Image (cartoon, rainbow over all chains, first blue to last red):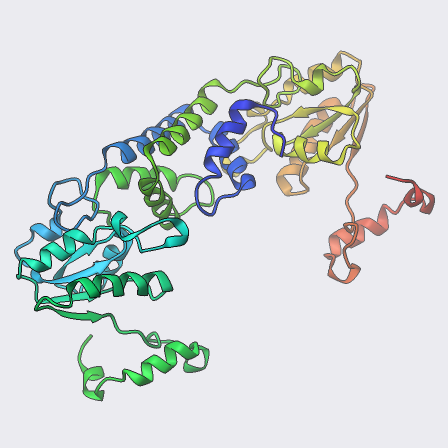
Length: 206
Length: 206
């Protein structure tokens, strides 16, 4: 793709480095910005750099937060002995949206992924182990996605904390509520049979 | 979607103003930047602002160009009496890729679109009419997309130049080469029958 301007080419190449955005989409986005007032690009450009350079994380759970301790970790209403281990802020948001979790989180910031060069050292695993070693944690819930990377990460953490007096669990996997059995994949359906729950549980509200 | 940080929220809202990018994708992109080195965000942010604030256009055809006259308009090898009217730089690139057009372009910068508030005054129509009034143009080819907006724009320009001694044409519409007839839509197939060309033409090498 030969572009008629160096400025345009640089911008397109930079945009195309974002995940899921190819050169064609990048060009479409760049041309869109050119049709909008200068202020829109200034705001976009500034907000990206501000985000990246000034972002701060909660000292306790490593979730993105404007304060040194996030709202959840600061709340006396939450059960601080129950820790849910998640990958990033989106998972925290998803779980918070259910309104059913009263514990706190621990945001790893990714999964162990040798192909992308992400080792355990780049994730917030050490602070999790330290937290558990302090002895105030009763249960750790693993809520990473069930991919090979997620399973590896779960197991890596499990090995480090299994000698402490702490319960470990993973979120239940099974056929989603509202889904037809015939469309569920075999692994999920198999798991949901293997780990069936007492019928009375399904009668409970939520 | 409630985000745990004002910085993140601002960035997500700005990214989500780009066409085809919703809040979820915007969040994914913002989180991606946070995982990358600061330099990547700096480069992206700078390149966007530089593009928008320093971009220049060819004085003759209004295509994006780093010089005051673009390469195409500057070339003595091009036929300057043949003008192809297009919407934006992507159309110029597409036509240049065919290697079959030896004339020059006139980039309107959009189509007349009352719904989005784009009137003829915001497009580079006046300079096209002036160019034709000078009398050195023999033919104008309309190559806008065949939407209602494209047709409106074509007709608007046509009305302004029809009294000058200039030929007007539109690019041929028809069933694409390699496409099966049964999958072509009725309008396209109908047009390709109505505007059939002498069989000998199809024997010519391009």
